[in-house]
Image 1 (tube, rainbow, N blue to C red):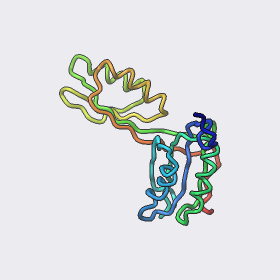
Image 2 (cartoon, helix red, strand yellow):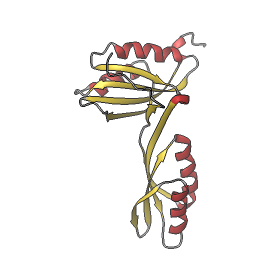
Image 3 (cartoon, rainbow, N blue to C red):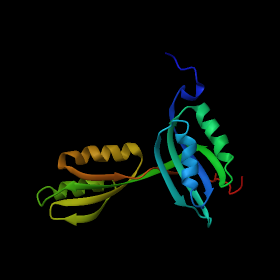
Length: 176
């Protein structure tokens, strides 16, 4: 059976930046706009901005162009939403944070440290049988780093959602 609904045609990964007032329940109201339409959020990051009382939500979602346009219109109707911008991958700087605990003993610890250094990651904890490494970067960089660490034994892993800003002087205005 073919689906003739344009919301589900040509699904791509999109990054949407949403400036909101820092009020109770705003994350729930924003994410409800996506989940009510059946879209799975790939990641969601909420953080304070340079302006007191204003937070930036960075939402990564798989959706069609049409769906993103509709979601943007709906989000702009929320009183606590200041501005919604779909970030263009070519003009955006985006990073995620990863903490990974890797098996490391006296014999292989130098190789684990070398791998971390190659990827510009930092050792943030050392135990007799493991190290915890902090790495930041694009999804592809973090994936490549994990592939290098796999032979040593990844014990635990946590990765944040993406945070992103436009390149150059372009900013999100603080008015609707």
